[in-house]
Length: 228
Length: 228
Image: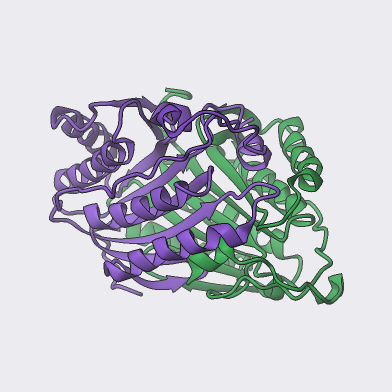
């Protein structure tokens, strides 16, 4: 069962080399749900998904949409670049299709637990991903973001704290991490920069911690005043 | 910073007794965002929050609504019962206010990281929470659920696996855990039962693991066929 094995199973005997750590073997992917706050939400959602496909943003990805969310799996490298580019494109397209209306995307990014039933990795070398580079969408977003390195039993947190704190510090330094609330960090900026900030931190930690999950709630076009 | 300290800081030297483990000291709470897929979303959201308050579901809770989500903190025990009862009431009220339209709630439940900046607990004894008992809302929901015990460095996963797998098995046994997808488990049933399933597993694991977070995307009134 995904929930239990993703969070409790040690990553097992790790063999192989970084070259073996393909996106598919690492289980690098995302789930996201898109919430246009309009009665036309069905047309907006499917239209936005089509817009992203028409823009070529689905290249190298596997997509599975169900009645709750859409799975985005990376088949080809650069996995993070492809996934984040697609997510930014879909959310920006939904915003355009609502004429700048209120649209929220909930995004889960995961790495280190391929498949649905096991969490066993067969690679030791965890690849260092290049920062994603996504063209600005022109749409301003506000997000609440949480990062979960699942250190597994027996891991030495001490050895992981440096890369984690460095990743978070970079998120602060790039200016998108603008505050914190209970259980989450506030990110503000262009949709592309907000998603890239979370994804880069997730990938940087993932070069040191096998299983890392991050969640973001990304809001555009909210009628509520910031911090309201 | 919440994100980094919540996930990386060891829980520190744990002293004190279970009696010291008040909901506030354990940081037991939730963040949720509510997404009515209608142009009237502002009235639906604030109306649903008001309905829950009028029903007395905010007793013993602290609420802070910002432009992305609402924080729900438990001041008094039973924390889990109060939080889940409130969340179920708000989502059901939003469904009623849309005439059974499509409404999605994203819910984060957290325990073991009080405050925003540190993750240090000062209790050893982690209290065992009673299962929540929420009256059925009459509204059917489908959710995708993930559970994240943040074992912290040096934890022995082996000692945690039994309670985690027991909690997940109970979720299966009660019939709400009906499948799995990449990175999440599918839950179906009345809003109250879906939320209670995730909350009970989260609390049960929290009796053994200091810091446990769970995320759910809960959908009601979706026009998409199940599994579509």
